[in-house]
Image (cartoon, rainbow, N blue to C red; front, side, top):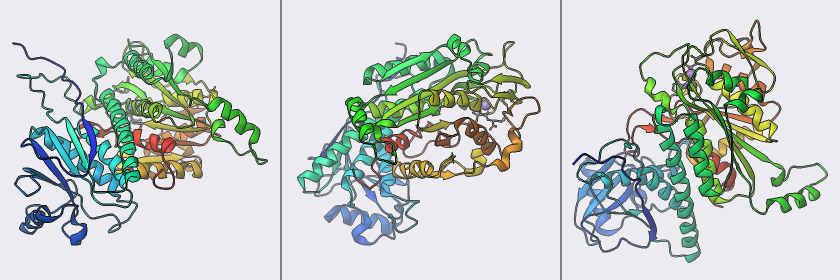
Length: 537
Ligand code: BES
Ligand code: MN
Ligand code: ZN
């Protein structure tokens, strides 16, 4: 029999319980263990014989409780656990810089690692013991998000042999001894939100992991429309002719070398009762004219290059296959809307994804060509591989034409940001300190850390052209040059640019994720519009 293709996405059932159920031999009890130096009470949430077992293992030195470390043991205890999974958490929050560490991040990763280990071990259920903390609802949500993230597999094209598709886990039970029923109700709500966000991140990842051939701009737009229909979002896609007719010369210029036409995907979220309330808010707005929620329109602009060969300024062959994920910013913007449509905040949001395939051909844009952008500015294209900024400036201008009052763009924009920051932090650029601070706080709550980089006229020379208003490349450091060019189009609207070139893609698998797309940005955007600035909502 020929092998069957395309395994189904794993469906996890996540619930909250007081204690692990009478254990099935195929089930696993997962325990978060803080660093070996943790005080006894903070070591882990286990008591009695389980705690004794953990102590013995730690003192044997086989497992240290370091971050991302895990150990699966076969054991038998009074609790009935037959397989025990220890998940290292490193030091506890507060033992190092608070801005660098947060238990939610560790728990999210631990839950993801637990799901991955459980699938490897062919387990059917995991009882995940939640570490004690001040905000159990927030931690429960992180565990639910992590469990969903851990269930993600990108081996879509691997054959399934003997009907075994590698994912056996169906039950993920979050164990907490919190007694207060109202707190438990909030935990259950947050577990539901964690599912929504986790699934939306996985949706974005699956688009970015899709090969370029199976996700050209038209297919990207079709998938966005399918998602929008499922969740009640409004979608509108501009095709190649409209892009040209409207004067989006940046997007058109990048797309012109490909047999696959470019597109501009626009997905909107409108809160239900907002229209009336917005009117009332406008009438009631104070003497200073402070904008109400209803007056604001947030725009998320995502780079959507479905494959980046570099064009005529062609890239070297090494690692070029990763350029199938050059639409990760666009996927993240759409993934955020997918979650937002279900979380229903009272704020208008639009996602805009300029999408094209950057190819060399007889029709391609050439180094030295000049494009006229939607904003009216001309740009000399000195390097066709600096294509992201060309499509983004048209996306940003389009966002402003729709009335965007605040913009966040996400783009796998420059190799230079990888050199600058490595792959643990996204580069944040902004023209507005308050907006930058708001996005930064959201990213910290989301566990997707950013690092602010300059947008400064010091770099003006890099984007000065002899024959046009700007040029698209002027040498390194290029991340700052690219951001400066974008800022010319974003002004005067408050804008944040997230260069996710390093954080959107994982080169090597980890305990909590396969190699490939990470879905970075989704959580930050969701947190930005749905999260609370003051801890738990
Ligand atoms: N998509 C790339 C940036 C990138 C590089 C993303 C590596 C993820 C991993 C972008 O379009 C690009 O090609 N940038 C060039 C610009 C330069 C040649 C002008 C770069 O950064 O090398
Ligand atoms: Mn490029
Ligand atoms: Zn690119």
